[in-house]
Amino acid sequence: MSFNIGFWSDKEYHLDRMDLRGLCAAYFQYYAIAAYIVVALVAGGAALAGVAGAAAPVLPALASMVATFFIYPLVWYALHRFILHSRSMWKSPLTAGTWKRIHYDHHSDPNNLKVLFGALYTTLPTVALASMPVGFALAGWAGALAALCTGVVQTCTYEFFHCIQHLGYAPKWGWVREIKKFHMAHHFHNETGNFGITNLWWDKVLGTFYEGAADRPRSATVFNLGYDEEVAKTYPYVARLTPNWPYNTNPVSRKREAEAASPAAVD
Image 1 (cartoon, rainbow, N blue to C red):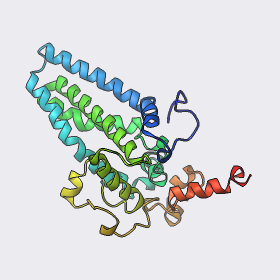
Image 2: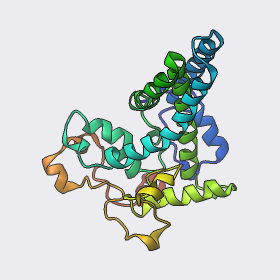
Image 3: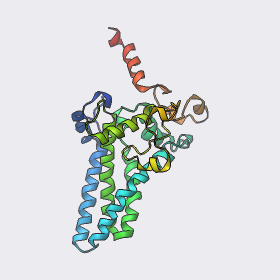
Image 4: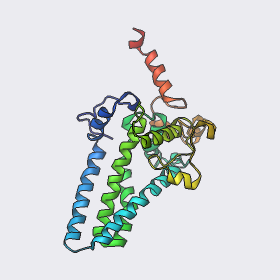
């Protein structure tokens, strides 16, 4: 889902063919990012008003923000590893479409900007559930709103650096180069590790971190997450929703082959 305004027209946008300026233009025009910014401003403003009006003490409200800052990477690591990479969501027609939208499409075409961003209808409720109860326990409703603001800002940061990891260039900042290398390994070599995307600490703690191709064998399911023709015989829901299915090969190679076979290329 996206609004066909400004940058987000019916054209396709591929990060491996974009520069940082083009990414920034796309990023701030995407409807989900705009919604996150509005939520952060409203929630943060309400939290500040609550603290200023003595509805909540300052330190517990700050503690709710700090707690969210540290909880966020663990929540997204767990979601990425145990839900998005599980082999259960494709089994039900109720969840297959959501799984396709928020993860299968991204792995089958990692540089397609239109399927890289998380879906607003899944991401925002997840951020709220992960942050607001902790904030409420520490500082009441002002703490809950402060925690939500923190989680949404982290989501915006996460989405931006996730996009940068897929740009076709070598980032100048060493930390960004490192996370890009590990995330590209997750997408193009073996999807069973490096789940943290922008924060690899939990991968290192829980044994799912790997440096590169020498550390793990190449995965046969890195582009389809295990959803292949045999699986589709029993669970056809994702296949029915996916044009030109199946996607079992490197998406960069697929694009080159499609372009070479196009009438324009022949002419």
